[in-house]
Image 1 (cartoon, rainbow, N blue to C red):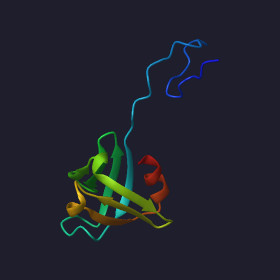
Image 2 (cartoon, rainbow, N blue to C red):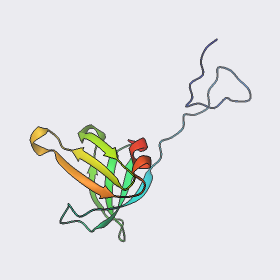
Image 3 (cartoon, one colour):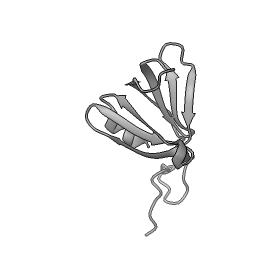
Image 4 (cartoon, one colour):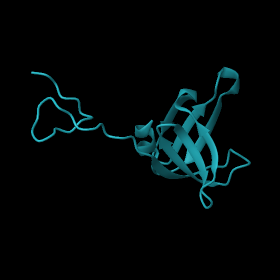
Length: 109
């Protein structure tokens, strides 16, 4: 028996004809930081198909967008989310964000 791709919903009980694939969504999280001096302390972190974006919390202006291929590693605990990003070894930077949603952010990456 063929295994059904989980991205597709069955159409009228059909076994083989899939409906349209599920489109990617953007998830947004409120994070706090004090490592990026030119940024406000409270930011919106968005995870989308483009990568990780940081936006000004009040104006929603894009501060930076980090493509997924530039995210080297990440991790979290109950009060923090940590990410290392950069184009190469000499430009990598570690940023620590205070948030209670570290696990949810980590699952999106």
